[in-house]
Amino acid sequence: MSNASQLRDSTQIVLSRETLEGLESQLDDEFTVTVFPEGDDDCRIIGSPVEIKEASEFLARHGVSVR
Image (cartoon, one colour):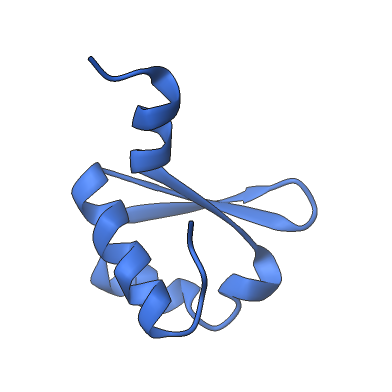
């Protein structure tokens, strides 16, 4: 059985706004995700587990470390 943190980790990515700069529009165009501002410095990318996995791979190909 899944726990809440596993489900949360599979449906969102939190990055600094600086890290996401220049990639947000590509994420919006290529994936079914929503990018929300999170505080002053971060953004939260939310989507289905499949979309988040693909978005993570996209970000990794662009040099963004997603754990």
